[in-house]
Amino acid sequence: MASSRPRSAILTIRGPLRRCDLPGLYARACALLLACEGEGLLCELEGVAADAVAVDALARLALAARRCGCQARLRGASAELLTLIDLMGLADVLRERA
Image 1 (tube, rainbow, N blue to C red):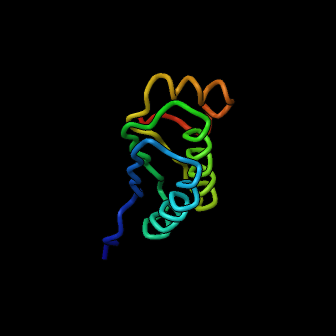
Image 2: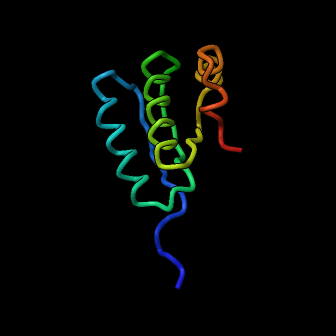
């Protein structure tokens, strides 16, 4: 019988992000990843600014995904945020969903 669990975890992240939001966001991602089969974490970004806090949050989420044996992907990231991710050397870890 096929599993009814979702194949990917989808996490909607709404801006603005503050540094104090990061632990809760990480905990939410970990809970979602445990509930899925570990295929991936899709981060849907809504109004997330291109700043160091956003990149820190996304890097933490990528780490959580990697610890579960999968990858994090982004959807809805602004061109500015993608540029900042690239400048910070994280473009291989934080990719836009194809």
